Length: 220
Ligand code: C5P
Image (tube, rainbow, N blue to C red; front, side, top):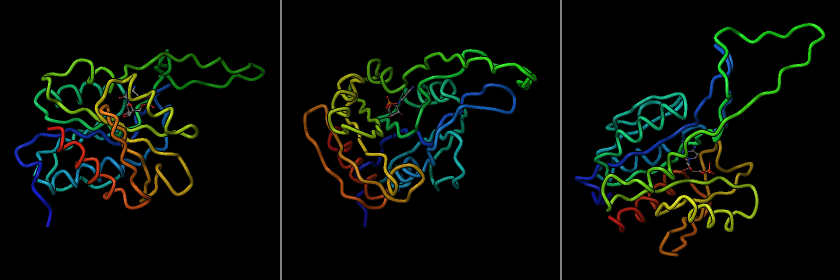
């Protein structure tokens, strides 16, 4: 039996990975499957929350009971998340949002030309949705959480990122063969702005999701 500790709450979860178009047939993307975000949405529904899931480029079935908003790019994700966050008690950004996008979009397919070197790919920064949300909360009690996939100095980088983004919680995981991207399992440490650090052992993404909601629920 699951406690309905999120009953009456509205939570927003982002999932998947954004795609930044180069031309009508190409994009810059990432390996996020969306599974962790979907697990967060399912567990929040089970705990009684009203859930808005902002999903970028996932191939997973809609979680029963959640409102699903589909987006492609980081800009679209920003709009959808900020809109849903207006009356949300908590926002958990599990999506892999592209940090950069191509500076120019070619209306026609980019062609290779014989004997010519390819043009360098120019990139510009995308808005940081998590940092913006944290700095500009629609109401002061809103809980904002992010995810950070790191390959080295996982904890040190995570602590620095938590401080930089000014969110309440940051779920830090090491990108590895059996973990994070595409996998059914994950292993993480949940860092809190209050200094509390919760290690979550290797296990199903649903289990990690429940520990995230435990930490969120305590702050509501
Ligand atoms: O900086 P980094 O991409 O590692 O941060 C990861 C966290 O920040 C994730 O929660 C992700 O959803 C969020 N993020 C964001 N907007 C960006 C980049 C990342 O909200 N442009």
